[in-house]
Length: 216
Ligand code: GRF
Image 1: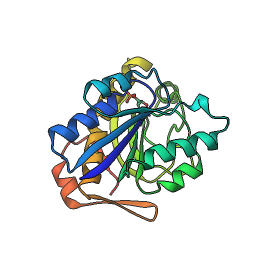
Image 2: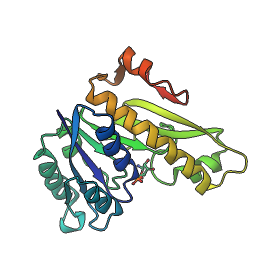
Image 3: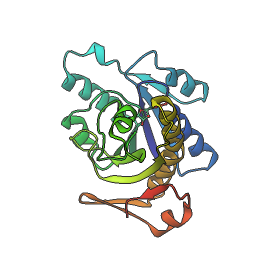
Image 4: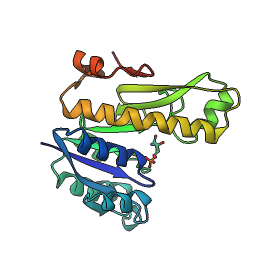
């Protein structure tokens, strides 16, 4: 049984979708803890209501980023995670944390990386006039929003889209994409070879949704 630790800062809709899929699809995994840096995160209450163990490591309680990262790493490590899932976790993690969990730390970002790293991705995509936007799940490296890409969900941009309508469709795609990727990882269908991600044929065959595009 693999151990998953999910880090959130807000609503936690991705976390909830992963936790539900884990239970309903009987993954060989369990969500050991949901940890938030924000004590008031709505996702924390929702996780608790689902019966998940929740913890808070409040970044404001630490004088430096390194001190916060170190405290968080200790709490995460206590669950011996096979995979640490960043799901709307809004703190940049430094190299100390990232290197400690290298190869078992993933993130979802609301754009087709390497386009639009950082914040306000939907507004920037509209301003740029791109015809396709979407979401990316990637391994985390010390460079922000830049690690090896595991899979992407492509969302066409409509002529009448505004930031809110585009964000809604990207989020809906995230809720399919992220559980599918985590399922693949806990079933050992995803491997990292240097900077490239390899997926098993079973994973690609098992997952036939056309607008989710795997790395290979
Ligand atoms: C998602 O859009 C994700 O791509 C980004 O933060 C948002 C989190 O949403 N990293 P939620 O908290 O999972 O609802």
